[in-house]
Image (tube, rainbow, N blue to C red; front, side, top):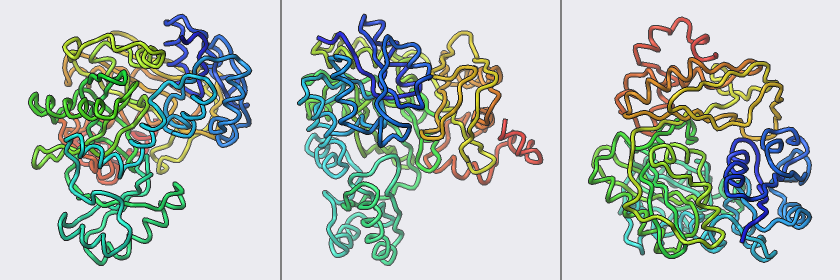
Length: 466
């Protein structure tokens, strides 16, 4: 049984977990760095405990400090949120060995699904389609060239232990493959401590679509898909549920494949299976699994009506799934705009400062996930995400209109954010039509083509930088 929950994270996700814990009648304890002592999550939690200096390596990533904090505050369980230690198999194993409950899957599953090459082979065994490529990590150029003969060019070279879009290169031909393979291996070794890479077919018009699942170790259910193709430097910027590219038949096959893979590995907790969808052929391919709650989980909650964070805590406590697949239905449309403390007019340079004025949008179908408040000073040590603006309405057109209204109401003085960029983006004709892929946003930022952007071209700095 869980009575006291230690939350090892910060910002909006820490606050999100505090709220879920309160609704479950649990004592919430936020583990924070020295610089995060005044965050909204700390203020709202029942208790708080400092786990180290501002640097993440000395606090949020410091496993001995976290375990010691759990012991001091007599926690029963630890929730890692997303990022930091959330997908660390060694952390999950240490938590369990310390007699605590880890809110997430077993360490072996994290290790298995966190390794892209192993996850790929696992998917194949479960009968889930994967992008054509090497069946395992390639050891050298000779093997890579043999794979290329079968798969064809262009090829993606991907770090087996990579994440967040890092450690990826594209080879257009054999000469590029010969040059980039050793570079990719060295880069992977430096970034992840693991130099293994594997190869995949490069899908030129790919959409990034993911499926949310919950599992109790025996049975799994899905909560339909999310569209996550609007990305910058392979980092998601704007998400929506469901996807405008998927028809009912494809949706069923896609989501059933996700459930099949989750059940194949005996998945426990909340997880997300990520796919590439080929706009040209209508094919979908599994690429990786995130063994944690996702940043974009609110859009799924909005269109299904289920609280995923609360559910994952109950599952970790040993409760079986309380719902059947037939209980989960799609209702309306939701979009999420990630608001970052960055200046789009300065190549998204981090923007620091103190919140001098803050007005959140309200009204029907509007949700704000954020730890901001007036007087809060942005620390320079962490991710730049400061808020998620989530909007729901009956259909996609209405949801985008409501998103525009919500962005117009949003006011923040003290530092620059990407809210103005989102306001511009949702007026783009291609975005309105749902006609985009993972390369769209990068091109859009450098060569704007929509009528709205063209009409403001002379004042682009003012339009981008709110």
